[in-house]
Length: 573
Image (cartoon, rainbow, N blue to C red; front, side):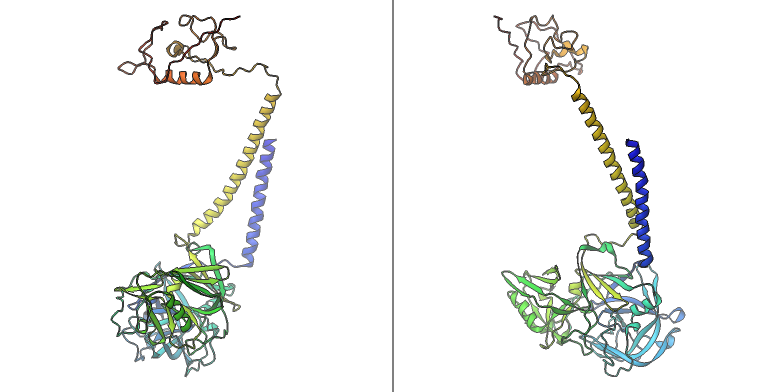
């Protein structure tokens, strides 16, 4: 019976496995496999901005630069050799390139603290990966900036801007003087989807380190000293690293197209603008919250968090001892900052659906030579209603960007895993196979246990069904070896115990006609005490004791327990 069930089980398992594999194959046939993750290392520049190593052109015409990141626009730009306002950085020389193609028209983009414009070209580009190889992307639309109208983007080693936006919200000729209207096909994502028509979306994960905050007002004496780091984080290109975040604590937000709000840029709504469900701020016994939907731009280009002026005043006003100090702003005259006590304690929570994400003062405070500033700044223009969640916020989470071919883009915030590391494809495959094998072992083990349990139960039922003696012997054990009987002289059963051929008590030791069986407790104490107190000589050998006479004692027996008292039987009537 058991062998038949086992055979049936082993026959069914392959069929279930085949069914699961068939379902999985059908799913893979309908959806192409996700591309492998390409890790792209980030670094800091002298101002604390995130940099990506970008190469333009190939062969002898290759030129290498450092580009900063922005998700607000999909236009990638590089400082050209005619940019008079670009300083202390490498400039792109189109005449040296062997792959550049001129396009008709010009274009540009505006950020909160800077803008740029120039002629448009097509170029073959590369991004350096952590393993030393390059990720190539051709036919990339590039703005060769011949001027930086405001701000200082192209300086201190930064030669360009890597546009990680979608250009879905770009209005026609939004930048003054623009004659080239960039669209989705001009972005990195649009070009990749054109080259990979079977892929429904471009997905990547962003895992950046904490930013280095530097006030833009150079007249301030409280600017922090920037120490560039070699590792500013990683972009998990083409496929997010599933081991880097906690899937049980994540929330997705749909990118909002054409959202009504007053933005900080002249070019209108930035790409990757989402809607949050509110915020809450606590400091000491004071708290404030906003349960109204808030329009926020997610962009690591901005180091801090920027709120409408009224909201920022309300939040920082809760911190006891806070003082408004515009000179410490990270956006110069565009925003204002607050000095706060360095020992202040506070938390800020953002709500997204049923999930909440909380930061405390360790993240929301900059300490520079005992001068501490709040990480939440306010727009100096009170008409701006836009929120920006910059690098200070994004660096505390794993951020997944999904750019879909059909235009429905999403941003997902996820709590980081405690041990973030790169995905091991072999471990995933091995874990899947091992998991299937583990399930089979559990099923087989359960069957074996069931069969064994039923077999034992049958044995017990057989024993119960047999006739038994009506006399219950309370304490019966097997006799000890003959060589030890006189040595220990244990009272383990009455002299006339049934089943014992010869009496257990030696006749030359005790001359008692009949003795009642000792109490169980006394018997156990006696046997334990005797075993523990067996005499040994100086070499550790056991000493055979002499027979004990009535009224005498032997030094070979010592024990911490009380000697066993043998009671005489009462006279029979």
